[in-house]
Length: 109
Ligand code: FES
Image (cartoon, rainbow, N blue to C red):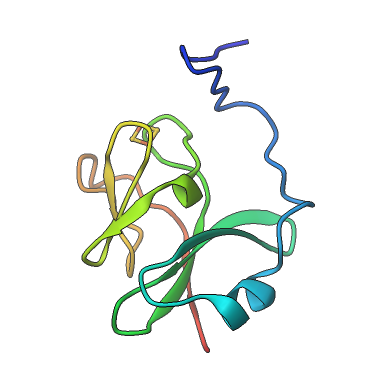
């Protein structure tokens, strides 16, 4: 098992079944929120930008597998809480490795 000093294991199965659905999260989400949810059997991070646009991103950082739902917004970029890599929320493009993407689905509120 690989875990960092805080005990974080990026390979551990995520608690997908205990997460609220994307629809449930959207009902209460406000601009600026980043919330863990499930989209079917996928773990996603629901992100609501300041202009109200909402997205569901795969909840897995392309750097080292951190939960993107633990991150925060900096403008329209989602910042991973583990090492601060940034993901362009609308496209899923990673700033440090542009060839890496996170799957994104635009949500209708
Ligand atoms: S896991 Fe390292 S920046 Fe996300």
